[in-house]
Amino acid sequence: MTYEANLATIESLVSRTDAFIGGEFVGARSGARFTSVSPRDGRAIAEIAACDEADVDLAVIAARRAFDDGRWSRMAPRLRRVVLQRLARLVERDAHELALLESLDMGKPVSDALAVDMRVVVQTLDFYAEAIDKLYDEVAPTGHDTLATITREPIGVVGAVVPWNFPLMLATWKIAPALAAGNSMVLKPAEQSSLSVLRLAELAAEAGVPGGVLNVVPGYGHTAGAAIGLHMDVDAVTFTGSGPVGRRFLRYSADSNLKQVSLELGGKSPQIVMADAPDTAEVAAGIAGGIFFNQGEVCSAGSRLLVHSSRREELTEAVVLAAKNLHAGDPLDPSTRLGALVGEEHMRRVLGYVDGAVRQGASVLAGGGRALDGSEGFFMEATVIDEVRADTRIAQEEIFGPVLVIMPFDTVDEAVELANSTPYGLAASVWTKDLSTAHRTAKAVRAGTVWVNCYDAADITVPFGGYKESGFGRDKSLHAFDKYTQLKTTWVQL
Ligand code: NAD
Image (cartoon, rainbow, N blue to C red; front, side):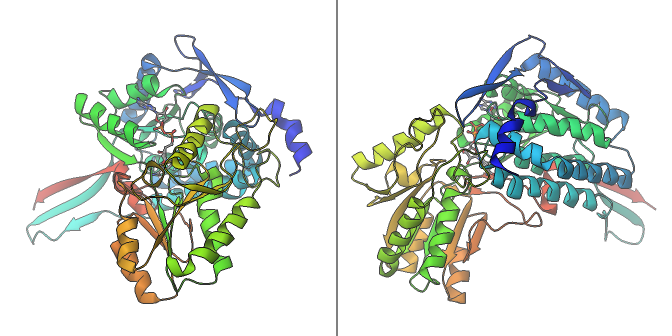
């Protein structure tokens, strides 16, 4: 992949901008469209169907019909496996094009889109495809004269609403297990990043996923998203996004049919560096990767560096150097490691956090401002902030940008208290050479994932999700099936 070749393909990249309902691409019934802007230069790249309640209704009807007639839900598991494996191969075939589309649409470096997002999408599809015909149900030990089976059944029509930071990857974390379990789905991508998942819907049809099984309704949250949440014939909603919108989905459920809701929300994840942490250069590289990957637009971004006072100076110096060496660039350039933030409004919000922190007495050690002067894109410098009080906004709230705050501690107990001092509980890391300290801290930190001597290490085989206000329910691993199946007891008197 070369920069020149990538630039030459931009014009031909965007192919699908309509909703995908009942196996066909269709415009919104209202005829409305919204403009999708590329954060690399602020230019319009597509006019996308703006679905609302009427379109969501059509999609749910199509999904329900497909579920009820069994075209997918009752297909032999091994045949569903073959279809999803075929889809994995098609994504592999088109990975380069999909990565470019993702990068153009939401600003992440194209190299990461290819090496991380698309690789994980393929792994996810393969993992759940392979699981389909290997999961057995249970027989309960009820006694000699009875037979009681516990079977997992698909839940029905699943609604999915996803964010823009890993558009195709997060969508696939939901699509793959939901479809593997035999459900039908209505998915709404974020309005900032609809393109890759619309293309995925086309590939799913090519792979043999029957019409009506996977429906994609692009549009705004307060229209299309709310319509999914409130729909009386959607059986479950799986949501990834911000806390305030997650709370809305609980209300939508209460105000409609009590549909099952699972929430993957935000975080303010601590990276704890103990006095006996490994080599400073190695730790600093991990810390910087943990916050600056994907411009910090990662729910599990390690946005708080909690460092033992004895290591503070050397580690701060090394992390600041790493930040200063990270230069924002055109996301479509394969050498770029720090891309553009998703949009102007979001960029101004992130910059506002930095200004607010400075007003509260914090000091900016690296970055703090816009990057790539003269560009029309939404670029920001990798930023490191020191002298931060634990109760200030910058230490408590999710920023969702390339901003790291540093806070020192003197004892392990103090580190754990600081780590647990926000409403979130998505992820954390502990850097130490001591096995006991590692395990004790991992147990004491209230988070869904704790990394020891690394950050962001991941595999589709392990679950991902939050404690506390980071949500509930798990994506990834076999545990994800819990969200997309319900248990049935069948009791037979013999
Ligand atoms: P967001 O909550 O603003 O939007 C997420 C989705 O919800 C979008 O599709 C949006 O259109 C929709 N939406 C917005 N308002 C809605 C409404 N009133 N009713 C129904 N739907 C509505 O979040 P975002 O800005 O797209 O993404 C960033 C957030 O996502 C961050 O908080 C981040 O931490 C979180 N996130 C969490 C995970 C995780 O796995 N825990 C992963 C990635 C992102």
